Length: 425
Image 1 (cartoon, rainbow, N blue to C red):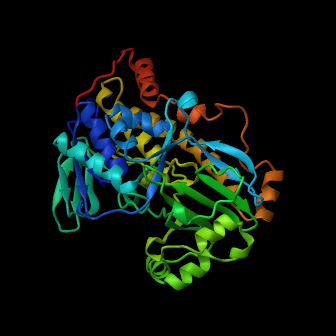
Image 2 (image 1 turned 135 degrees about the vertical axis):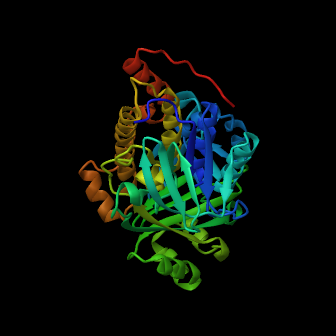
Image 3 (image 1 turned 45 degrees about the horizontal axis):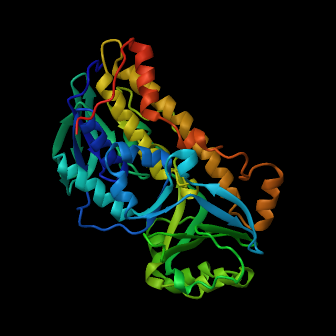
């Protein structure tokens, strides 16, 4: 069993979690290599919400200021009813309460900045290779193979390869993502195309809760001129070809998007009547069933991010929790020692992370329930299963968490050694 810091970590997947892990490991003085199938020239569409817990990590990695300047900074999402009266505000960030505003930023911008940092730090990235399987793992490390027949070795192998993770098959054979029954349909529309009602305050982002469910509009560029507009619909599960066919069939997708358009208030109708078809996208909501473990029996193969716990995007915590996984694992690995072997360390790490993810999943479910059609939403609200704001600062457990400090406090309690922070970058 590994009882000293690893000298080389292999990371499968160079998405958000994989890139963050590589940068965080470098900060801790541990070398890594990233392996990725897609060339970096392949662009990614869409934008995502980053809340203070993620932004705090990106700040420590030296990326926050650059990202903040390239996205839309805000604090709350307003909840409105069908009469367009504001009924609640959900904090996705807050300078006073949580030290950071929330940030909505294009996914491609975030990937570009992370890749630039990886390049600056001279972290190797091998493109055009597809992970196949683990050949063996023992006290000497992990040997793994790619589909082209080549092999590689590392002290530890980390699967950051997303919801359809191939690495997860080695750790949890037979576990597959589970479809929630809901698909999000979105488009990107110019704010100038929206018909705002007179004499009604309309802060953005906003979620309008009506008979059909919820319709969300969220600015996603620096000046807020482009707005993501979307809703979710119940839809039967499809295979990959079926989802691709739905996206390609613009008439069917438009029809689904505009279902019961007459039941929405005028501002939503204006969005649905001005959809730029080329910007339409779908997001089937899948979740990964709760796993017994996030690591192999030998503890040298580990999964994190969406590979371990895909979370629907409602609370803006999918990417954020992946960042936390990467940052905390990177804080832990250099502290391995005779009295803190890998077995004990990753068991603690998984349990600590699972407890936090469980709370986030519960929060996400409450928020998801507020987006259901009116009859379902009212029934669940009566049962206390929908989100309702309480006292200010109630999300401090999520946004103000000091995850790296928590890891080092646990290490100190286990080893009686006090670790200080350092920056290997």
